[in-house]
Image (tube, rainbow, N blue to C red; front, top):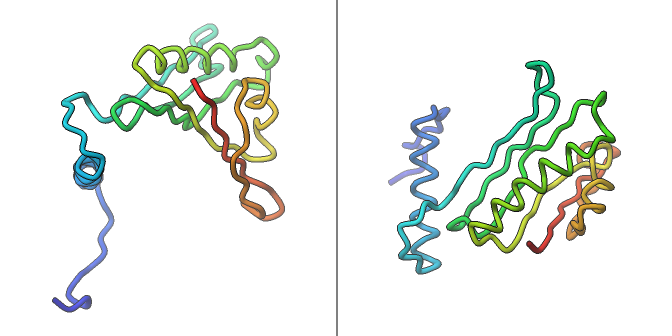
Length: 144
């Protein structure tokens, strides 16, 4: 078949799910995984004050819930210094450990929370320079 016969299209939510299912099946096959355990588990939590979200974390357990990825962690500036970020992070790490996870990883920028994560026992294992321009992106991990 000629490549010119193929067309790249924007994916909707259903098509995105289909792609993820294909990739998950491929990964299970390559890793010889026979378990029926769901391959991923979202861990999304927030904290409210007077009905307003002041902090939250979006994370995901993947590879049969053995690895934790922290997607987003945010605490409103007015509430920083109250250990809310630590509490949110510890909450998902404890859930991840209870499910058998052994590793957590994330990325953050030099203008975000690198020092916070270092205090939480994460270590830098990779750096992208000039990402975005004149800044660095840090890839971090922690054994659970």
